[in-house]
Each structure stands twice: as C-alpha cells, then as structure tokens.
Image (tube, rainbow over all chains, first blue to last red; front, side):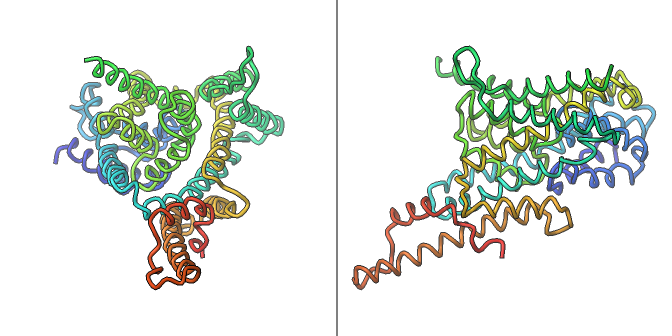
Length: 202
Length: 230
C-alpha cells in the first residue's frame, strides 16, 4: 500500500482511539510509526522533544513532523519538501477529522436536548468534575521537569517566583490608568519567556 | 448583505482568536484555557463562563486532541459547522506552519541543543503551570463550587494526578459525574413528588410539575454528585 494511505490510516486510528490528551496519545503514535519502520526510535524521540519545545498541541506538532519525514524515510524518491508537505497535510488532517466530526455531532445532539431536565442534570454533575480535571492538569505539571530541570536550588526558587507572579498577573485585576484590568495570558507567556532568557540564556 | 458582512467578520474574529490561541499554547490543551477564557469569555463575551465549562466537558469526553476539540466545540456553538471549521483550522495552523518550517529548514539537533530556546522555555514552563491554576479558581466560581461540593473536584484532581492506571483515567470521572448528576436529579424528582403528595394529600400528587423540578435541579445542582464517587 502507498505510504500516504498508510499514514492516513495510522493517524485516523490515532485520532479515534487517542483519549486523554497529547501525552497519552504519544504511545499510540510510537507504535503506529516506529513499529513499521517509518522512522527510527531516535528520530521519534527528537520529534517529541521538538513538539514540546514549539507552541501548539503536541499531537498536531508530532503529526505534522512525522508526516513530513515519513515518506522520505520509506522511499528516498519521496524525500523532497513537496512530498513531505503532502505527508504532513494528510497526517494532520487525519488525526483531527475523526474527533472534529464526533465533537460536532455530540454538541448538536446536546444542543437539541438542551432544555431537557436530564441533560441539565448531567451537566450539573459534570461541572465540578471539569474543575477537578483542570486542577489535575495543573498538579501534574508541578514537577521537577518544569520547575527544576537542572537540580539547582536558585533556579527552583526563581521558577517558583515566575509561576507565582504569572498567576497574580493573570488572576488579579490590577489598577492601570483608572481602570482595573488583568493582563492577557499571552503577554504573561511572552514576559516569562523573556525572563527565562535573561536568567538562563545569557 | 449587511448581515453577510458581519457574519464574515465573525468568522474572521473566530479564526484570528484561535490562531492566537494556537500560537501561544505551550504544554497541551489545558494550558489553552486561560487564553481561551480571556478571548472568548472576557474580551468578546461570546459565551458565559458556566457554559464554557459545559463545552469543556464535551471536548474532553471525545477522543483526539483536546485543544482542537475545544476549538471545534466553541466554534460550533458560536457559528455552526463553518464556525467550528474556522476555529479548528485557526488553532492548528500556527503549529503546522512552525513545525513545517523547522522540518524543512533545520535539523532536529539545531533546535534541541539551542541554548537560547531552552532558556526561554525554562521561563515559560513555570508560567504555564500558573496559567492552568488560574482557571481552576475561576471555573470553580462559575460552577458554583461551595463547601458542600468542593470534595468532588478535590477527589477527581487527586485520583487523576496520582496516575495509576484505570482509576486515574479522566473519562471515568466524566462518566461518574454525568451519572451522578442524573441520579441526583431522578432522586430529587422522586423525593419532591413524595413530599408533595404528603403535604397536599391529593390523590394525584405523585407527579411533580416540570417547573418545580427545574428549579430543584438548579438550586441543588451543587450537591448533585453525592452518589457518584462511591
């Protein structure tokens, strides 16, 4: 079978069975692309590292990258950028489309039955759970890889301060030119990046 | 004609909002939430915060990439299927273009061993954690979490973050939460019917009126999960 069809099929499966977000999906991705020999294990590790270091969902990043690299690895005749771009478009669309239609279908279904007591009751039970889900995401990221990757105490302290200041800037409204406003999260990310460069990059 | 122009403007706003969101999402779908909240709830007032939570529940219970699911469900809620396509496309495009540029022009090692990039990311990562803590508090407020219900998010967060197989699967708690909400509703319907027939003494008091049951769910939704985690 053509490598592009295989790529689409592999990523459709990942899109359908990948529950639980990017990191949970990565093991599926690994089986799908390393086992048939499309890319090597080291290459996969590199791609995951770069997917984490670039903005955007890790699932999209890795699909785009693997889709670009895989055709050339399987067939050297396909190692030009044009064939690579085709692979990355197909892999990215394939990983997105199943859940795209599932999400639309289920949200239409819910909207049609919005006024029913049962749907309201179900969502009233879901809301506290969603709060817990967001909290769990925060807790799981409070680890050494994010706060103290080099095991240096001053860096740990600096990172805790960055985190605390970022929280205050996003959460609290600060009086500024007669109005109380909170700072846009994107601006906070940019400021944190600049701080990181000043602290660790010079 | 005029309506068509405003419609097109809305699609464009939706696309550009999610393009921004996609370009600045580091660390997975949950890290998007403060940016999405700010853009969709605070700046554009497109959705109320409690409805935003409901949409998050839908996005999380589907397979696939959470960030794209969130974009899809919000786009669909605002402008139907075309809106969802715009939002999803907007959230994907930045990472697609960035990765493609890296894949075409650079080798993996130039990125991995780049001191400047890794320094910037050492600063961004702790800030991203803070960006996920903030929506925990705002969403708890929007969900009406009080002393009687605070145990639900606490247990969910604890069980998921200890990360031991099946009991740490988020889907499990979505199912339990939905079942708990439904069971509590059924239970309060029956209780109300019983108390009504007791007070009025009428022979046909067994069926509660829909208006009463609605207000009961609204008022007591905070305690809706009583039997879910047991």
